[in-house]
Length: 261
Image (cartoon, rainbow, N blue to C red):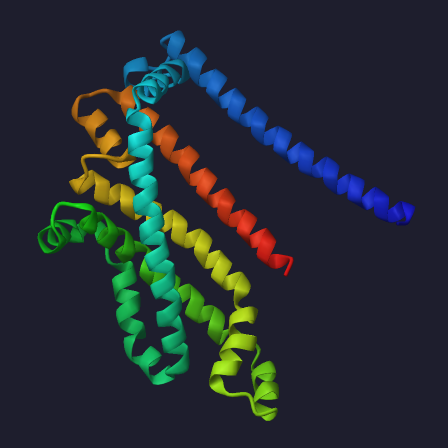
């Protein structure tokens, strides 16, 4: 390796560590400032709580086992809705790509459904599916499925037409085009859709838990609101942020692994 290449690699590593260090500093500074403002009563600790109170609440919930029950419930519902949503999204996107006339017919309906406030359908979903996990999964699917379909389908139709014509000139069938060109060329779009899908799924699950659940992080937050325990509400939000970060990082690792292939 040349000296110039080593210099570039070293610079990139330094930049990476600088960015990471800056992010950690900002988080610590935010938490420290929050704690100081709450302890000095500059901000109302009842309304805004404080990091020390949140830590104490989370510790108590963890020791009692309540925290893990709520985390597992939300994680299970999220992964279930995510798996169903991305599978259906991929299959429907393939169907729309293979049948262009069908895509033209349902495109405006997909756009309208995507713009519809899903929370407005909450009462109807509860009546249809019942006040149980089915309603939560349906709510999450309403939010993540259409976005997945549109993103993946747009990735398919964005594949280079010249490559498609080249494979067709060699006698490639539609299934072969899909397997050896369309799907591989759309890999980045599909992974990007995974990232969007998981965040949208988590939003849908929390919304569903607000409405019907007796377990989960969403229930923890809404219960804290009902009993005016805003520290519990903030604790639920902190757990939600941590959970969403971990899930997002898992998808990022999958992206890096697939990008090497």
